[in-house]
Length: 485
Image (cartoon, rainbow, N blue to C red; front, side, top):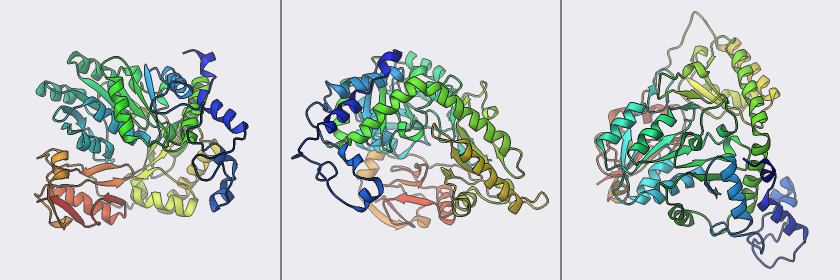
């Protein structure tokens, strides 16, 4: 990587120069560089609106870049060890859909884990690709899904020699990575494209104490959320491409289908600035983040009733739990005689701490480049207080173990989505074929997808989340389900 070149911010610099000329705006947006007064300007001031420009001369075009955006994307690719990069302003959600749409034709097969994000299912619907689902390694004790075993992926490829692509999650929401490098080698032997959902792994390339990034492992294409762990603004992400298995021009074509023709240059500039920060200082910043995580794990593990996952949860002998992201705090809380959902809510209500998510037995706290020791100490002290209130070594509440049992795919997601449907009560839907997606957010992993037969296990899972007052996302009103007629 050329560090001198990485000091540049072509797009941000161009926008800054444009604003400094104090132009007379007769173009959109309508706030005319912040010449308005709203409740939002009262909060943020007017300065940020000056940088919310449309596409003036000299700023380049996001979808046909030849100037500063083209240069900024090239710098992003270099920093992330890719050959090409594409800036995204609709998050990794759009990037995953673009990957699937840009690599697969209707009826071509793709192997993917069943715990994929909803965007992958939407990608199947719009592309017409045929999913071959593989089961991840479930930890029913913690109530989480990990990676997929290497032999499971290999078996799926061997049973489907006409498979065009393979999809991986690197890392999972809980920081677990599979043996990605070996998997890529096996896939490439069979001329299979490997695409990665790297929504939670954008930072990993900048520190060798962290698991391999998708590009380092040899993946052909990945979508990563710089906003989640690297410090750019929410919704700003990137697509990365390496090698010649993926048709870059076709990905660009898919890009124009899913992206706004009025992209936010504030979001795009945040990608440019964040890339510079990480390229120049990412290793040292992440060293500090990892030290904070290690400090947190050490202190939290001394508190009665809780325990925290660390890299010992993973092993080089387990291809589905091969490596661990050292910036995650996966905290087991059932020893407090409370569910993760209860602890999640109490942390926000009584301690003003916002955790990332909860599951049956765990809560997740994400440390990133903006985390501080003061933040971590607040978390530690909150758990000390919770332990003093709830821990009882002689009285343990039995927390139900959440098990994952997904239904059988009977027709393709696209076919189910477009089929004639009927609306019935969810509790009376066993044996029916769903024509909609049902998920709990976060993390946005569907418990039911179009084309899947509804099982009793899925109904029980739905009841569990409903009782836990989780956020259920579906087309129909809660308690009902659209099924194929």
